[in-house]
Length: 516
Ligand code: D5M
Ligand code: FE
Ligand code: ZN
Image 1: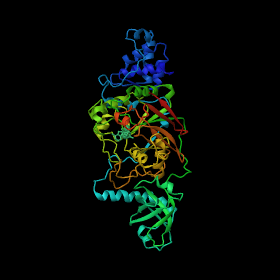
Image 2: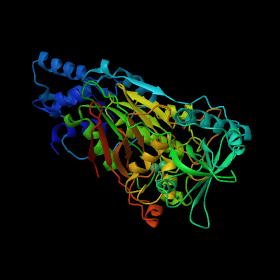
Image 3: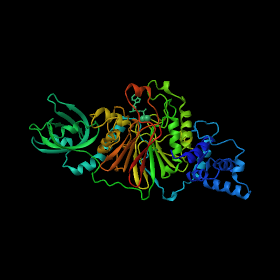
Image 4: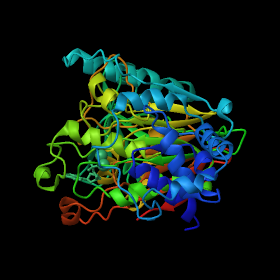
């Protein structure tokens, strides 16, 4: 890697518990005697400082020139700093407390156009959960889903409520907007789909030789769609002529940033697991300090920060850190290795210490406090974060297991996770099917609906890297930082670990950096 100089400086700083601005690192590494300069900076650094900034470098340079001697002469007395060895940031002993770091990180600046940065959050339901777990809440969340997802469909077809269709005569042309209640194959190989709306249910038959038969394989229970067709002679069933999905319009024209700026989209760090890849993470963090990464100003983290406890049976056997709070403390240390002037936004996943049912609120205050060193924005799963005009729908991705299990291999597989994401975009819902892997928290409002078409859809969870475009929306599943677990070995999941997909926010192009 062409990072020798800056990478070594960063490594040295991290091993001593310091973070640094990229410009400061560049200046130190290009000094005549970087090691000596570094030592004099650290000597001069205020006790409470955790981030080495350019003004610290300037002050050290000035002090050495006004004292008449080169900084190098002081530095030589110090132990060598040029080991070049990767440092680990797990050593909690020499790193000051998170709270101090938080104050400090707020002062930092990255070298470039700070004032051009912007982050807006939409759909963060942290603190606004209304669910009581009662049956009525399920009724209201599904009613909200039908109402909101159905509204665009209702303007596209001539529709009738289920009860009105029941009283129409045989042979009539009909249309209905509803939730998929049931999908069954008939003895003769056709498909019977029961649609439900606020008034009742009605059965729709897809004949196996119709072009729409192939779409039946994509359907999930509880998704909202519209069907048009013809009533049978006895008016007891409708033969499907067409199906319509909420979908993303093909004409969707994504927004882009008006300068060259990048975001790293990652997930599934799994700190606390024996398989967490600390070296890969540290390499990634070091790379972020280099010139090659100078345009990376945002880091999005789509859940599973830590391994958690009791998430899966026998998970304890593979825990490196057994206490959940200790796991977050360690995760916080790993976050500190990321340059302080990169903006971080994160959502929880199924391994994190929040309720499993979705939407998942963005952590309680005690955990936020533990993770505060880098001052990340922590929002609910899912949430939409808009970076300089580019909207990114962040969702951890538990429903992808379901999409992959239910759909035929060629439509969704672990090898091409982005294609599974396409189906969620088509259904305009991040977790349509209720009652399987994905747990749904009953709320007054369905927070899992994809109301506005995002420019980027970012998920994780399945530990596979994959990206592609669906109707101009960039879908990225971001891999993980955890090597293969025993469970994954037993079911043949070969994770893509140690990759960081980097998105150009001005062009929505993706490059992938590998650190393992
Ligand atoms: O899950 C990572 C991937 O592995 C995701 O596709 C689920 C699957 N997985 C991992 N462990 C299990 C167990 N024990 N049962 C079922 N599925 C599993 P993550 O939740 O991010 O670890
Ligand atoms: Fe995970
Ligand atoms: Zn997960």
